[in-house]
Length: 349
Image (cartoon, rainbow, N blue to C red; front, side, top):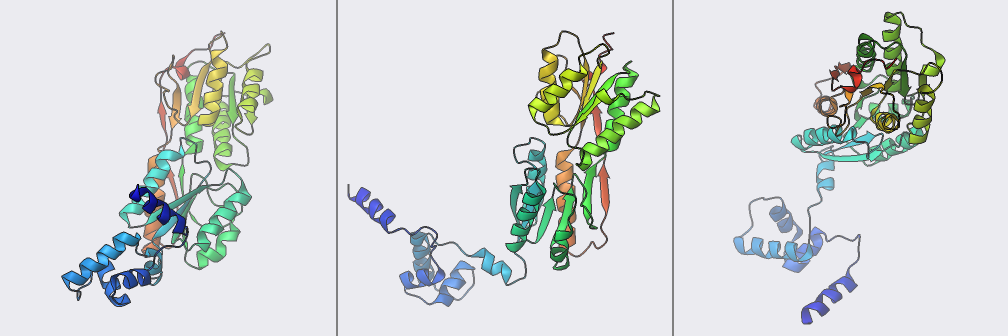
């Protein structure tokens, strides 16, 4: 019972947001601030008895060293920001993890957030991170005008864009070969006898969506196939919109015999639509999806290496911070076609 009262008393006097300082530790241990500083930073000049008393005070108060103030004196905050499109998207999991691992190897903390594909929210988040003095930024852009970042770049904030290029500024960017991957996917369907091939993609203003549409059209043109207007649909990846687009392509007197999907979210919705149809339709998706190999048939995909995208971008960021890079560069990583069965189905008619 006494312990319960003691805990209640401590909770009653707790002031959240008011962390103990070195001054509090010094007062509790009965020593000077310099002595506490020496113990906290592992410096010599403190007797074992005094060090023990200081460490007891640190433990009792729950004191933690203020690394922010310490690193600010050195001109760095030892932190970087990562701005993603959507934290819930499985594609960004390995990318974020790779950036975090590189940051950790360089003694830095990663702070991330989501733009929700909103250019205004992206700008707000990026500038908020800059206001908190991050040393650098890895950005998956939602907008197409990044001139708002020019003052931060001039101030020395290292910045690398990933997955999509920056708009209206010169900056490092690490991309996948979206055009080549899409062209390979559609050429694969054509090689298996398909002529009526639909494409369902993301919003056309997004760089990756535009490049994948361009790759689709290039493959069709290479094969001498004229693309009907009804065969392409770009827009939000909302399941209702994607479902409507897929069902329209699969209906009518000349339905498509194959569909190329522009990203993992579109692919998942199209798989559900195809499961409701008796006629078998070939499918190739851009981006791999979980359990794609366990479906019947397995889903053929164009796979990006999200981890390598993140790692390459983060490594380039820290090379900027080390002063070894000056000229912005565009790095394009290859994609890989993984055949599992759905892209190899022949036309049903």
